[in-house]
Length: 261
Length: 261
Image (cartoon, rainbow over the protein chains, first blue to last red):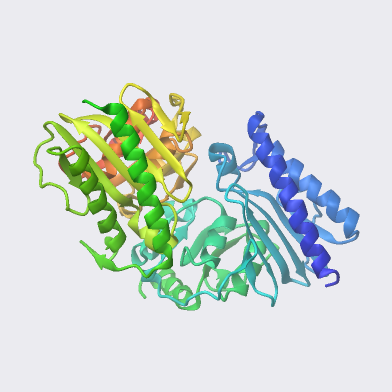
């Protein structure tokens, strides 16, 4: 991929500009709409930010494809060439209800392979970023390669949907860990696994824009990012997901299959 | 109770001083011990901070009783007179694993009635405090009386223990809300209900020091703080707890009893 440094600098500038607009919006009344169900919401801010990103990508990198959560990008059914994958506000419910714990996410994939990933935890002012092969950062600090600890030594994030399922396999994972945490932003939860605060993150159904940036960052620090059943992520559809260091990833996969380690 | 303003100023000073010591300790190796089980941990910092608080209380308010999580206070079986209830680090697991999302908590009760309550979210630098009858604050900003919204309009925090139970009544509450969040600090979760970020917080077994400060703050903003079954909190033992605005409190209680609203 060409212009990697220029892309990196532009993306960071765009993200900080978008965050400023989002924070300013706290003073205004949000315009909230339902999507698939009463807790799948979108605001005017999600739409505004996505449109701005798309406009800038078109301006600087014409002809490149864009996959965006709010649908203003391209309707793509392949990952050939350069594809931008963007989530203007990850954790929209948190944005609406808490004005905290939401993230801006941008990733660039080339022929299906992650090249650049960005997760900006807006209210904590923490920008997690990675370029494939060059390591991951939190702001300007290099994140160390993850310690390969067993599940029982770490806190695990499990999505609301997965924790609430009656069959309870995800809860078996929770009980085998130090404890369950639930933030409600796939981006922030993945970033916390990458920075070693959490030992893993499991979710029932993540869309491509929930996964793309986090996967680039996670893999740069040595995490394993797959579907819940261990299969490869498919960035053209929703995936049940699991990200964790190798040992915990193996333990969690085994627990999910059999209830036993 | 005498010297309320002096007490308030001293407590805030003590809390900020303790927080500085805790943050400095991030550079040192923690000394970690198990208490009741592998996830019930105590560090040298919990003990150091509790001892310092007790020393200061003895110095300034000799003869007053102290109930502390780490057991350096008094072995009390009544709430007569003035009783200090302290938790040097609430969310010890978060402190150890995340170096974030833990709180310092201090409360003063007189003849069983809450007078002063303090929850300091150390890493966010947010001090939630209340004096009975005078309102609750986050730092120097008065917290508004809570909006009496229904459960379905808010995010609810449910403790790891309660979410993991197989019978699943807590998960029914989660599904009836906007979504479940799980921070792992009773203090911070209660503070987030008091500041309107969450609509409620349910926990399986909170000790007196997990409850005391939060209850003073919660009641000052109009929240209802009871046992899970709606009974009065008993600050001499562990309690399954529920804190929420009146309408959501009623809904959650009904769901827990019958699975139906």
